[in-house]
Length: 358
Ligand code: XIL
Image 1: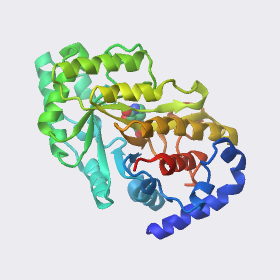
Image 2: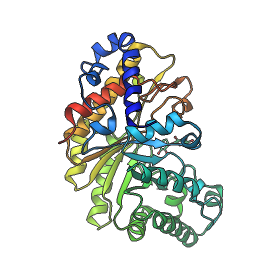
Image 3: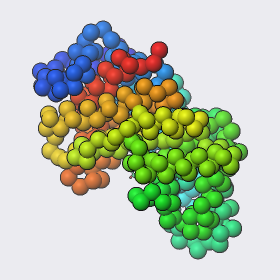
């Protein structure tokens, strides 16, 4: 389907939802289907102007589900492979690289004029057992890490606009996470990873990325201090990635705009990289309204700070969302499992339309 049909689809969805969402729409103000009916932009992409509105992309649904790929192509201007660039996929055996799944996603993005965020070069999770259980000496592990980063970032040079170079290097106590890399290489592995990534892909923005760092708290402050120290040593960190995995039952973080601003003041760009807002099931209209409000309250501070350049959702439909990984929870994305836009979709669209930068 082309753009006109997509607009028609959205308009039909808007009409279908208009009745059912009256109470939710009241709670979220202008962020209802009416915002679209007024002749404003009908896709997130059209509304987003200078902010990259992105989504995680999964396989095989990109190929097997035409509605999925059609919404992906029309609503978003940036994509992040959900799993295809992780170590267990890209280097499943020592020195044996597999870029076919990620290349496929990159080709889709290119065909649709979309940017690609690379996720991720160094992470403790989805790490093949040959890395973790290899009994490597520090020198061997350092060579393994260097090769992995150089080959992967080199392969996607010029195609990936930003890399999550190191993902989740701090733990929930806001100290360096006890990973195989920290154990064998010491804290310097982080600086090394950024230097290697810069050598392989000199034009890419290079991010540190983590969860529970939306507002000002002990963990985001630990990142502020860590990054300030790295920059003082000349390490090429250029972005701070705020994942943005929230749940309505946990409350909403404080001081998000001030947090974004302090990283921008360090000279970095900031992006929301994995936004979703899960809820305890079952879904109710009240929960959907709260969810929409959470999406807005993450997006609005990003729109308010010039250095906040991207807002990526971690999947756009409940049909494929990872959020069911949390027992009894889910419904975390902006479209339901039948691709009906949820109140959160209208909230994001209305925010982009009203506050997108010109
Ligand atoms: C998740 C994917 O969505 C799942 O498909 C996979 O099984 C596990 O990883 N933080 C991250 C992402 O940085 O890579 C994770 O993605 C979600 C949490």
